[in-house]
Image (cartoon, rainbow, N blue to C red; front, side, top):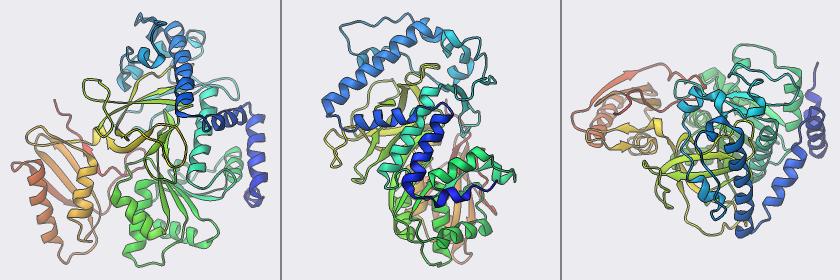
Length: 473
């Protein structure tokens, strides 16, 4: 059945039909959307009170209804705030979720959700969700119906912050296994896609012919001025356009997701697409977590849905400006409490102060990449992926390499894979890369250079620029 005509309906009509469809399947997203909007009008003090109430409710239910948390023996002291109580909870790791999955499930659903293979018998209910598996082993978590609604709500709000609210048509450069395997998209998904205004571009397809198809699709309808994309896929497309001196598409905004938006990547996206770039942070297991507003002074954490901490190696809170491990507590997922979950990313809080946009939600200054992306130098220093990307992408960039990947395979052992763009001057450029890398990671480092036809994607379909196959210590 052809439902593409839905995308040509006026934006208000598509938005109304979207909420009606969600209600028909049992979703309460309309109520969640109105609730979220009420939070955006709160002062900083009022916001803190609401967060403390929501956090306290989650923690209290978790210690009474989840065997995992009940065994901790924690009790809520009425003299402390919910935020203070939270600090007494241990950090939740991926390994613990995999090993103690059934204990995390709340008591009333123990028999129904017995394992990650469990499936709900109801149309719109809890759902087992797997992480992308970037680290090699996917982790399964459970999202209940309420959290699924909040996940949809935060995505709508992120689009609002990025200048294309519900009803606005946009290109979506995202991973699609169905497209890659030539499987037909289900009817309900096609209806939803057209109501949301998505024009799909498959980020899993990144060879020259496919990048040209993406470019032609964007150029074919100049009235569509917005792009939601894996940031690495968007940069690959921008580099392709730039290297071939193609006419630059004129977009208005780009929501850059699923990766670290470095200053260098932001610059090329803004220049090639003539667009304003918004950094959005989230994950499959936690949904959307934070997003930039038009002031571009940090990423607003979505306070109605998540509580975020940034801690050092000892678990102590990091002050603004200090890079630390990001912990996420899902405030609305009561079926499978995820409290102080270590998501695997590094981040930095922005210094306190009001945002020019007026939104009181706390702000992360930046996301510094994944902890697994960090490389270990000769003296044990950890180098973040942002540093390495700047090294190759800016300091050593001679426009001779199209794509690259830097992998640590052992103590002092590295592989630099690259897709050559031009041969003239390439040998000298590679020699300079080797010399400069050794200054950063140690003179005794062994760096193998490998010319390849393409950089293989991770199981998620995203390109991993920095890979650490050797776990230090």
